[in-house]
Length: 166
Image 1 (cartoon, rainbow, N blue to C red):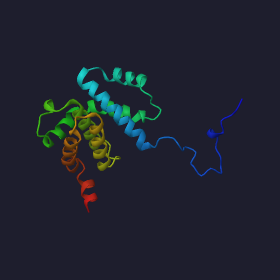
Image 2: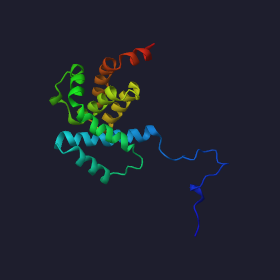
Image 3: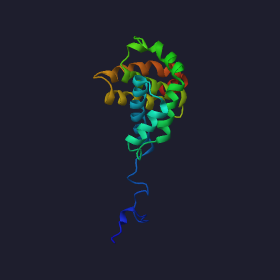
Image 4: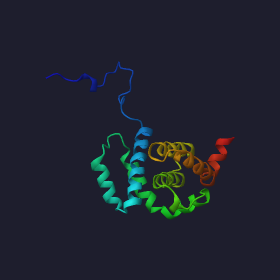
């Protein structure tokens, strides 16, 4: 039997032992992508969150996903939907019912992060929301998401935004 030396620790190798493994930010980005799809499904099909989560865990490879973060988003957004929607409303020129469902999922996810995950910098939240809208939203949906989040961040993270602008 031939052993694969590439999986063994070599003290002379300058690469860290976890080289090749996705970073925390990559795992979170993957969690956000799956959560966007799951929130869209929740919004459109009105399926239970536990059913959606179980389906996503079966149908997707979670090896490069922050599964805990996916769970937190998937359950946190619906649990805080009223607070999220109230925070979003003043930043929109449309009603929530008029929004594209994908962009609504992205905006709710991003608003939840701004409200509940102060450990994630607001600029990261905005950037991730834009990237999600580029991948899953309509042609110019990312521009809409960017505009809404640019209005929302100073309202929800006033001190952090002011500190960054100094």
